[in-house]
Image (cartoon, rainbow over all chains, first blue to last red):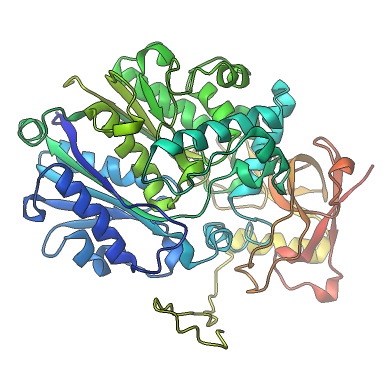
Length: 385
Length: 159
């Protein structure tokens, strides 16, 4: 029987496009220090560490070893977990497993990226099979563009519908002092931005960010002594599909998110997601995901995403505010990106989200996306499960 | 290589040295390229459990976790399932050079197969490409073939 686990502290850097003032381990340290300060723990209280990033982005292997002065893992159990875009949720879920197993009481999860140190598209391409896929593959954007085109054709969604998602996230980022992009944009700005790969334009996609995040997980009995209002893990689900791009069934939708959400909702006893969940921090790497993936998550029915967004249901003050932090479109330090979703959702549950706090949050959802159309889900709540 | 050192207060180090790798294509993948060279056509492989035909052929079916060995001869024809015209520049990790743009990344279902083959389509005008169009693979001349994915030059729209 797994032990109950809660998040008791979170920390993140002030995210920027380029941090030449710090190397990787120093940047990791900034997030770790803030997470420990947040829950008033010392590094000596931490029993184990899980860390991850995108393998080829910095081209420095074995972050579990070389980062120890920043992660604080000297002479502690440390493990590197790397799953592409889902790395951040993978480190969170691995830290949860560590504590739930009963072997460790206080575990630190770290995600980080110095995106400025390489070309993001070239680095992402190294995830693809060198014999078959690498010749034609051009990184994340065209794969997502094909998904967007299919969705527009199926439901008549428009580029303006998607632009509203980017505008929402960038507007929310104005409330987040840590966010990378903090300049408001309009639908017209998105429409006028350069076309990268039809129908995706520059302002439809996430930026490249230098940044790190850290989250402290603690066991039942320990968590309550550390945090007055811990964020309890109500559910975790992982669905990782194929690694061959040609094996993904694009007509079936994001099946990994459909599968992960079904399992997570069942674990957490959620029947009507848009009613039962108070706030969602979703890994939406581009605007069209904000239409289609909320359908996969059951916030609304198939093809209803554009109307759900336009009616303001996902804005602050709406039925289910999405990305009060500004989301991935405002900040994308990739190995940290999904962990930021978990940290932000935890902050909402703990009532520590300051200017971006949604009132009276009892249940919060965080997702991770990456790999080859892979999805992770974490549901947090105020009530000990 | 950095030619002029920028002595700003915060320094960076540039690495731009080639690091060669040699990847094994495997038995079935090698057969795929031999078939292209010998007969200008594709070869796939069928899963004995689910019946799905994969191209290029590979040893394992992931959902069934089965080993495959039944090869299937396929024509060089297919259908566009999805595509995207790539307009932004990036360094190609396969060559170290910037990949020429624009180019069209295509998901193509090869006739007689059940998965999707990704390659390029030699048409970059979005108005002239549509999902559902029939395409044919155009191969390199036999004497220029090297046993790699570029032995297929591109897919050409047939209509």
